[in-house]
Picture 1: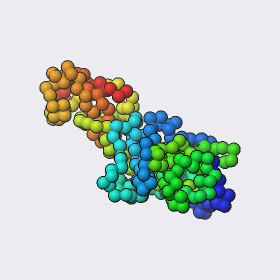
Picture 2: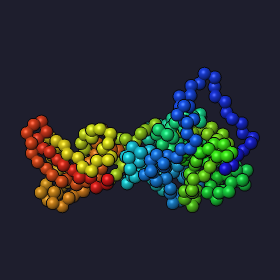
Picture 3: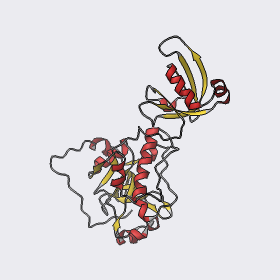
Picture 4: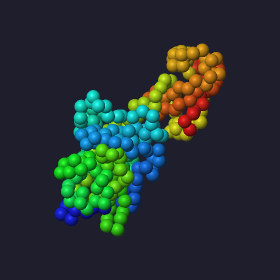
Length: 289
């Protein structure tokens, strides 16, 4: 852990509320990967010029996995043909962003929504000299702001530190520690406004139904009534006779009509007729339990 003694604690403005103080002060340690164990934050490599954009995508992909309630199969990725953007631009192109300059608010965001990005961390020579893991940072960016994904915090014998996951040319490093209020780490942090619940995080084809309840991600199967129009749509998705589909257990993705991130891969186990407003009963067995 590196501490810069020249940096003083930033004071809160008089009258400014601290809505998350009680909940965050009760914890001496938090890591988003402990709460959401399916998060995968490591990357193989990243050129210096793409670090801001890739860190933004890291954050968005992690929050997409949280919305999806499991590891995703689709993700935002850097394309060589794309223009280089900073973190704010990426977030604004994908629904906007919210800013954090208060430690308790950053903690609360981590605990409830997922990782955040520090856009104000300054990669100085003094930091690199004192940092035992300086190889985790791209040296070509010394003397510049270096966006970092913040994944949690921890209390140490020297005080509280942020847990960060730097990106460099050689890929994502192990989690590093940067002390609170040092090297600009928490002067300005941002996170996407979007919950990414309207984004599909696994490849189709998709059949949309109404998912009820909050435990959809734990189900092993679902049985529901659908209309004749819905049945026609399912046929279009599967592109085969239902008799063949039932026998072959053809895979498709069942997705919530209102929140596309809520989706499960599976196959059609049974199809029966019943009287009523929803004359067709479909039973779908999930494969991604």
